[in-house]
Image 1: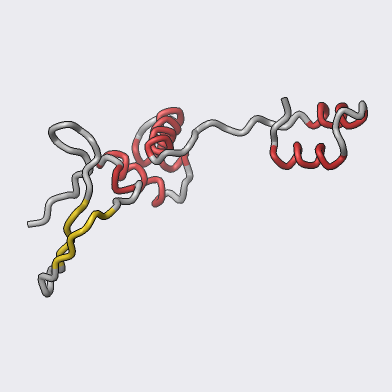
Image 2: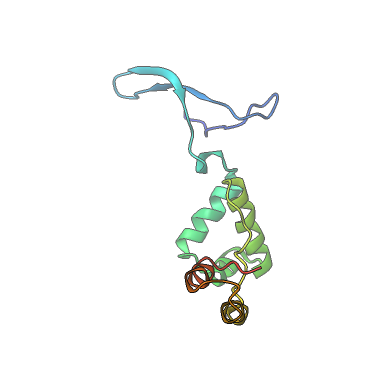
Length: 124
């Protein structure tokens, strides 16, 4: 009987390391320290959400219908998963194009800097 992979220690809750792999067919065993993927470290509920999200092709409205939850709840679950994977959930600030043009006209920035600001989306 195969059990689901646990990724955290039941005693201290720290991440476990995989140290042994075995072939079901020939019983060959490999022992070393192996890394688990970021996805494998997610909880069962998070993995089920990702499965539904992929099945719905990333369409949040479809995920809402499938799970019977609101749009903000879907977004919240998605943000939690993004954070758990180690990524930022903050959006890039919107570019104030008028401000870039004004700065360019006043000579505060060069044309190249204006282009770069518009590409990066960061205007302070």
